[in-house]
Length: 273
Ligand code: GLN
Image (cartoon, rainbow, N blue to C red; front, side, top):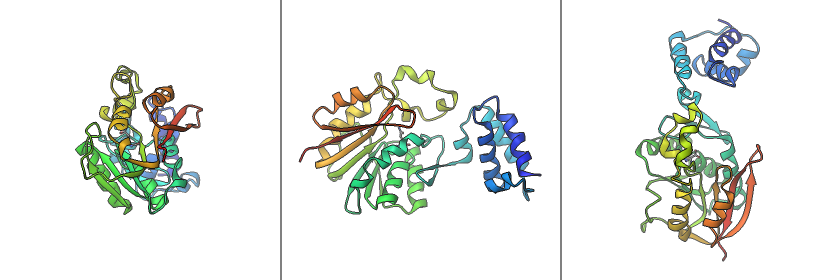
C-alpha cells in the first residue's frame, strides 16, 4: 500500500475526533509501519502494513485515547520520552520552563524537578546543560516511567519517590535551582477539560480547590532548600501569575514569561544572597 494513501485514509477516519487528523494519521503510519515522513511525501509503497495493529490504534483514538498514549512515546525538547496513562503528556509550552534558566546551569549545578512525571523536564535539562538533576515524583506508576526514561537517555538524573506536600527529610541536598510543572488546574475546572485531557492522570492535573495547592507546598517545603542566590521557576496556568507572586512574596520576582500563545506561562523567583 502507498504510504500517502494509507495516511489519507486514516486521516478521514480520525476527522470526527481530531482537529489535526492529517498530522495524527502521519504519526500513526510512521510509527506502526516503520515509515519515515519522506515515505509519505514521496508516495512510496510500504513494505509492511500491520493492518490489525493500525485498526486497533485507530479505534483507540476514536474512543478518545490521546495519540501520545497510543504511540507510547512523544518528543519534547528534541528528545523522545516514553509516555503512558500514568504520566502527563509533555507539552510544547513546558519547553519554556526547561529553557528559561538553562544559562544558569552547568555540570556543577544541582537542580530539583518537583512533580517530575515522565521526567521530560529533568532529563532535557540534564542532557542540555550537564547539570545534576534530582527528579521527585510521588506516584509509583509515574515513577517507573521516570526511571525508564532516565535509563533510555542515560541521563545524569537521580529519581526520588517522595510526596512534595511532605517536608523533605535529611536526604534532600540544598539546590541551586528548583523547577516544577506541578498540577495546577482548579478542581472545579477538571470536568470542563477536553476529552483527551480527561484521559490523563487526574493526579497530574488537580491543583486543589483554587489550583495553587502544589505551589504552596513547594514554597513551604522546598524553597528553604534553595541556596542563597538560587532560582526557582514554575509553569503556571492562565491567569495564575499574580497568585504565584503572592505565594512567593518572600522571594524576588525575576520574570514572568509568556508562551507562544501570549499566555503568561512561566514565573521565575530568586532567593537573595
Ligand atoms: N513535570 C511533568 C511534565 O511537565 C509532569 C507535570 C505534572 O504531572 N503536573 O510533563
